[in-house]
Image (cartoon, rainbow, N blue to C red):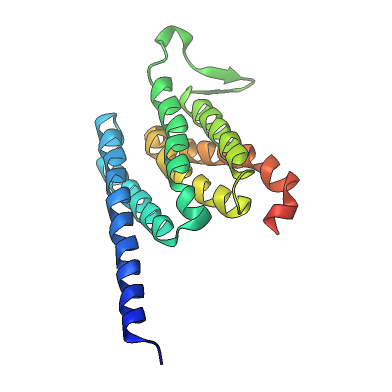
Length: 182
């Protein structure tokens, strides 16, 4: 049977971790407000920013590599977010990006490029983490959610572009550092 004082101390410690995680993850809702102000549909912004906040809360409560992945994931997710919004302001004289028989707006390639940059940077940071695979997955999932708030401007294809770019950026780290993944 566990000592009641020890039990109370452990409960107080765990409650303190949850309170601190709530304090640190609550500002993530502001990303949703920023997305709404910059043109993302309200329902999308609310849903994704709520998912982002809850995931950040869970990672912070868990701690270790997941807890350390929260801030880089959020900040690097702002890269595809910003790229998508920058692409919306490309002058009309530059028109669309045309290759062969297809023309697309600049949003999808910019989302993919932003995701690639974020993924490569997360991969670089993951190499120094105690658990590189866990860090990369944690930061990558938060970056995809953050980036999707901006890349949703062109629908699911923009979000897919950001996710594919991010995955491509992470791939070298996950492949070449197998010893740390296993």
